[in-house]
Picture 1 (cartoon, rainbow, N blue to C red):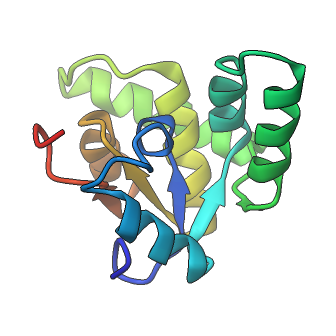
Picture 2 (cartoon, rainbow, N blue to C red):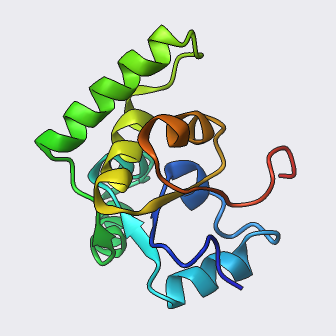
Length: 140
């Protein structure tokens, strides 16, 4: 069984970090085998900062770069800034800068975001992408 509705999904750091959890592993694997997982430079930077050493960094960088990519473009930055303004005017809670960029990169390409982070539900309304929880909130 795969995540989402068949749309490619940018894998957020929150989902990547949980991919081996027993409640997640089979779905994550099936989604990856269906070539529906997408990388993003912002997520790669977040994940690579957790590498313990040069070898782990290299292996992780290679794995992440093998995914299709949702790049950070001028359009992505503009969309993230617009979404930030919309959320501020609606008195929505603050969202981390990285999440704006990841969500906008996904939206620009017509991708969803696979995550375990409530910020993406808020951003999905502002940016118009599919927000997909890796498991229901609060279950892991």
